[in-house]
Image (tube, rainbow, N blue to C red; front, side, top):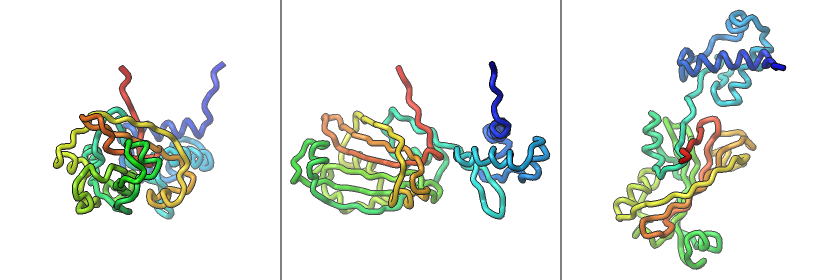
Amino acid sequence: MIHQQPLYRQIAELLREKIEKGEYQFGQFIPSERELSAKYGVNRLTLRKAIALLVNEGLLIPKPGKGTYVNRPKIDSAFDTIQSTTPFLLDMGLTPSNRLIYSGRRKANWKYAQIFNISPDDDIFQIFRVRLGDGEPYILEYTYLPYSLIPDIEQYDFSIYSLYDIYNKHGIQLAHDTQTLEIVKICPPQSSLLNLPENDPVFMTTETIIDTRGKIVEYTKSYSSGKKFVFSTVME
């Protein structure tokens, strides 16, 4: 027995198809509720449910008093490569920038001593940043590395410098990246930093990066909205 989709889902699929084909492009307002209701022969309640479904998926964004416009397409992030965030955003056609929340030195304590195979009394360096594309927050990153890894690391302004450029400058060659991905509910202060509602589902990724000497040189935990990203990998 074939079960037909509810009418509002059928309308949502028609609108999604037009977005994917580029008939409704990023930044463009879709036709008004009145126009779409007349076009598809449905009442406004059905149409609003269809639009709400696409808003929830991140394809559309409502603008009170103006209408509903098409959101930027989700970024497809490869989950099997080591890549700096800055060129990654550039590849997506975005102008990258950083909002530095904090950077500084601290003791490793038990957790990071275990990760980096160092003493709990050894120092690590931490960097908290919001990674922006066209001024919009995309990724919140918490990065940790052994303090002894990079001489005078505190001299660098991480709202400007790429950590990967600094690795290259100091001859640190990255070899392997172990990543994990979870879907979690985001809470303050992370939600406000990413301009997301509290308890919104987000991707939480953790990366452990090893250099060519077999040493763990970086541990990063990051949060990104499921409305802005999809993750892909190649299975061989």
